[in-house]
Length: 220
Image (cartoon, rainbow, N blue to C red; front, side, top):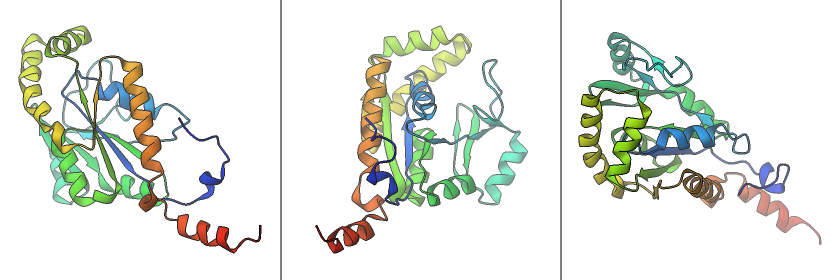
Protein backbone atom coordinates (compact mmCIF):
# COMPACT_ATOMS: atom_id res chain seq x y z
CA UNK A 1 0.00 0.00 0.00
CA UNK A 2 3.01 2.29 0.12
CA UNK A 3 4.73 3.90 -2.83
CA UNK A 4 8.15 2.51 -3.79
CA UNK A 5 11.04 4.35 -2.17
CA UNK A 6 12.62 7.02 -4.33
CA UNK A 7 9.50 8.06 -6.25
CA UNK A 8 8.79 11.68 -7.17
CA UNK A 9 6.19 11.84 -4.42
CA UNK A 10 8.91 11.16 -1.87
CA UNK A 11 10.66 14.42 -2.80
CA UNK A 12 7.60 16.65 -2.30
CA UNK A 13 7.79 18.24 1.15
CA UNK A 14 4.86 17.77 3.49
CA UNK A 15 3.78 18.44 7.05
CA UNK A 16 3.80 15.39 9.29
CA UNK A 17 0.55 13.96 10.62
CA UNK A 18 -0.57 12.46 13.92
CA UNK A 19 -2.35 9.12 13.58
CA UNK A 20 -4.39 8.45 16.72
CA UNK A 21 -5.75 5.01 17.59
CA UNK A 22 -8.28 4.60 20.40
CA UNK A 23 -10.34 1.67 21.65
CA UNK A 24 -11.63 0.09 24.82
CA UNK A 25 -8.99 -1.96 26.61
CA UNK A 26 -8.52 -5.30 24.85
CA UNK A 27 -9.95 -4.29 21.46
CA UNK A 28 -6.53 -4.22 19.82
CA UNK A 29 -5.34 -0.63 19.53
CA UNK A 30 -1.98 -1.32 21.16
CA UNK A 31 -1.32 -4.38 19.00
CA UNK A 32 -2.20 -2.44 15.83
CA UNK A 33 -0.17 0.55 16.95
CA UNK A 34 2.93 -1.58 17.48
CA UNK A 35 2.41 -3.41 14.18
CA UNK A 36 2.32 -0.29 12.03
CA UNK A 37 4.98 1.51 14.08
CA UNK A 38 7.40 -1.41 13.68
CA UNK A 39 6.86 -1.68 9.92
CA UNK A 40 9.83 0.18 8.36
CA UNK A 41 7.83 0.86 5.19
CA UNK A 42 5.78 3.45 7.09
CA UNK A 43 8.65 5.08 9.02
CA UNK A 44 6.38 6.21 11.85
CA UNK A 45 7.56 7.71 15.10
CA UNK A 46 5.80 6.11 18.05
CA UNK A 47 4.55 8.48 20.71
CA UNK A 48 5.58 7.13 24.11
CA UNK A 49 3.32 8.40 26.85
CA UNK A 50 4.20 9.06 30.43
CA UNK A 51 2.03 7.29 32.99
CA UNK A 52 1.63 6.90 36.72
CA UNK A 53 0.33 3.36 36.25
CA UNK A 54 2.39 0.52 37.65
CA UNK A 55 4.47 -1.31 35.04
CA UNK A 56 3.14 -4.69 33.90
CA UNK A 57 5.59 -7.61 33.82
CA UNK A 58 5.68 -7.60 30.00
CA UNK A 59 6.38 -3.86 29.72
CA UNK A 60 9.69 -2.04 29.36
CA UNK A 61 10.17 1.46 30.73
CA UNK A 62 10.94 3.88 27.89
CA UNK A 63 9.59 1.54 25.24
CA UNK A 64 5.97 0.98 26.18
CA UNK A 65 5.62 3.97 28.53
CA UNK A 66 7.74 6.28 30.60
CA UNK A 67 6.67 5.25 34.10
CA UNK A 68 6.78 8.18 36.52
CA UNK A 69 5.28 9.02 39.89
CA UNK A 70 2.30 11.31 40.40
CA UNK A 71 4.42 14.23 41.60
CA UNK A 72 6.51 14.21 38.41
CA UNK A 73 3.36 14.00 36.29
CA UNK A 74 1.75 16.94 38.06
CA UNK A 75 4.92 18.97 37.50
CA UNK A 76 4.78 18.33 33.74
CA UNK A 77 1.12 19.29 33.65
CA UNK A 78 1.68 22.49 35.63
CA UNK A 79 4.39 23.61 33.17
CA UNK A 80 2.07 22.93 30.21
CA UNK A 81 4.60 20.40 28.90
CA UNK A 82 1.89 17.87 28.00
CA UNK A 83 0.10 17.94 24.67
CA UNK A 84 -2.66 15.88 26.26
CA UNK A 85 -3.33 14.10 29.51
CA UNK A 86 -6.08 11.97 30.97
CA UNK A 87 -7.02 9.94 33.99
CA UNK A 88 -7.92 6.37 33.04
CA UNK A 89 -8.79 3.62 35.52
CA UNK A 90 -7.43 5.74 38.35
CA UNK A 91 -4.05 6.39 36.70
CA UNK A 92 -2.70 9.39 34.77
CA UNK A 93 -1.40 9.27 31.19
CA UNK A 94 0.04 12.08 29.08
CA UNK A 95 2.01 12.95 25.95
CA UNK A 96 5.02 15.27 26.16
CA UNK A 97 4.55 18.20 23.78
CA UNK A 98 8.04 18.96 22.46
CA UNK A 99 8.90 15.61 20.81
CA UNK A 100 5.63 15.72 18.85
CA UNK A 101 6.14 19.24 17.53
CA UNK A 102 9.70 18.38 16.48
CA UNK A 103 8.60 15.30 14.51
CA UNK A 104 5.78 17.07 12.66
CA UNK A 105 7.97 20.00 11.73
CA UNK A 106 10.48 17.60 10.19
CA UNK A 107 7.78 16.14 7.94
CA UNK A 108 7.56 12.82 9.75
CA UNK A 109 4.45 11.11 11.07
CA UNK A 110 3.69 10.06 14.62
CA UNK A 111 1.28 7.42 15.90
CA UNK A 112 -0.57 7.73 19.21
CA UNK A 113 -2.23 5.06 21.34
CA UNK A 114 -4.51 7.18 23.56
CA UNK A 115 -8.10 7.28 24.77
CA UNK A 116 -10.93 9.58 23.67
CA UNK A 117 -10.14 12.17 26.34
CA UNK A 118 -6.60 12.58 25.04
CA UNK A 119 -7.82 12.57 21.45
CA UNK A 120 -10.08 15.53 22.13
CA UNK A 121 -7.20 17.50 23.62
CA UNK A 122 -4.79 16.80 20.77
CA UNK A 123 -7.43 17.67 18.19
CA UNK A 124 -8.21 20.94 19.95
CA UNK A 125 -4.54 21.98 19.69
CA UNK A 126 -3.42 20.42 16.39
CA UNK A 127 -6.65 19.84 14.47
CA UNK A 128 -5.15 20.03 10.97
CA UNK A 129 -2.46 17.48 11.82
CA UNK A 130 -4.69 14.82 13.40
CA UNK A 131 -6.21 11.66 11.87
CA UNK A 132 -8.29 9.60 14.30
CA UNK A 133 -9.19 5.90 14.17
CA UNK A 134 -11.42 4.05 16.63
CA UNK A 135 -10.99 0.29 17.03
CA UNK A 136 -14.09 -1.73 17.94
CA UNK A 137 -14.20 -5.35 19.14
CA UNK A 138 -16.45 -7.74 17.16
CA UNK A 139 -18.49 -8.44 20.32
CA UNK A 140 -18.43 -7.82 24.05
CA UNK A 141 -17.97 -11.55 24.66
CA UNK A 142 -14.81 -11.51 22.53
CA UNK A 143 -13.59 -8.43 24.36
CA UNK A 144 -13.90 -10.27 27.68
CA UNK A 145 -12.04 -13.28 26.31
CA UNK A 146 -9.19 -11.11 25.08
CA UNK A 147 -8.82 -9.43 28.44
CA UNK A 148 -8.81 -12.80 30.20
CA UNK A 149 -6.30 -14.31 27.74
CA UNK A 150 -3.96 -11.41 28.38
CA UNK A 151 -3.60 -12.72 31.95
CA UNK A 152 -2.14 -9.47 33.23
CA UNK A 153 -5.11 -8.06 35.17
CA UNK A 154 -7.07 -9.27 38.15
CA UNK A 155 -10.69 -10.37 37.79
CA UNK A 156 -11.77 -7.15 39.47
CA UNK A 157 -9.75 -5.04 37.02
CA UNK A 158 -11.19 -6.93 34.06
CA UNK A 159 -14.73 -6.20 35.25
CA UNK A 160 -13.84 -2.54 35.62
CA UNK A 161 -12.39 -2.42 32.11
CA UNK A 162 -15.50 -4.04 30.65
CA UNK A 163 -17.74 -1.54 32.42
CA UNK A 164 -15.65 1.37 31.15
CA UNK A 165 -15.63 -0.12 27.64
CA UNK A 166 -19.32 0.70 27.18
CA UNK A 167 -18.65 4.37 27.85
CA UNK A 168 -15.61 4.39 25.59
CA UNK A 169 -17.38 2.65 22.71
CA UNK A 170 -20.01 5.39 22.64
CA UNK A 171 -17.27 7.83 21.56
CA UNK A 172 -16.85 6.14 18.17
CA UNK A 173 -18.81 8.95 16.47
CA UNK A 174 -16.05 11.44 17.32
CA UNK A 175 -13.50 9.65 15.11
CA UNK A 176 -12.63 10.01 11.42
CA UNK A 177 -12.44 6.26 10.81
CA UNK A 178 -13.74 3.13 12.56
CA UNK A 179 -12.27 -0.38 12.24
CA UNK A 180 -13.93 -3.50 13.65
CA UNK A 181 -11.02 -5.68 14.77
CA UNK A 182 -12.38 -9.16 14.14
CA UNK A 183 -9.30 -10.30 12.26
CA UNK A 184 -6.00 -8.62 13.10
CA UNK A 185 -4.54 -8.87 9.60
CA UNK A 186 -7.63 -7.33 7.99
CA UNK A 187 -7.65 -4.56 10.59
CA UNK A 188 -3.97 -3.89 9.91
CA UNK A 189 -4.59 -3.64 6.17
CA UNK A 190 -7.45 -1.20 6.76
CA UNK A 191 -5.18 0.94 8.92
CA UNK A 192 -2.51 0.96 6.24
CA UNK A 193 -5.07 2.16 3.70
CA UNK A 194 -6.09 5.03 5.95
CA UNK A 195 -2.51 6.15 6.45
CA UNK A 196 -1.67 5.95 2.74
CA UNK A 197 -4.67 8.10 1.80
CA UNK A 198 -4.07 10.69 4.52
CA UNK A 199 -0.47 11.19 3.46
CA UNK A 200 -1.68 12.20 -0.01
CA UNK A 201 -4.07 14.93 1.15
CA UNK A 202 -3.38 18.14 -0.72
CA UNK A 203 -3.47 20.41 2.33
CA UNK A 204 -0.79 18.33 4.06
CA UNK A 205 1.68 18.39 1.14
CA UNK A 206 3.37 21.74 1.67
CA UNK A 207 5.72 21.34 -1.29
CA UNK A 208 3.04 20.49 -3.83
CA UNK A 209 2.49 24.05 -5.10
CA UNK A 210 6.19 24.46 -5.89
CA UNK A 211 6.26 21.08 -7.61
CA UNK A 212 3.29 21.99 -9.81
CA UNK A 213 4.81 25.37 -10.69
CA UNK A 214 7.97 23.60 -11.79
CA UNK A 215 5.97 21.06 -13.75
CA UNK A 216 4.12 23.79 -15.64
CA UNK A 217 7.37 25.60 -16.39
CA UNK A 218 8.85 22.55 -18.08
CA UNK A 219 9.10 22.28 -21.86
CA UNK A 220 7.75 18.88 -23.00
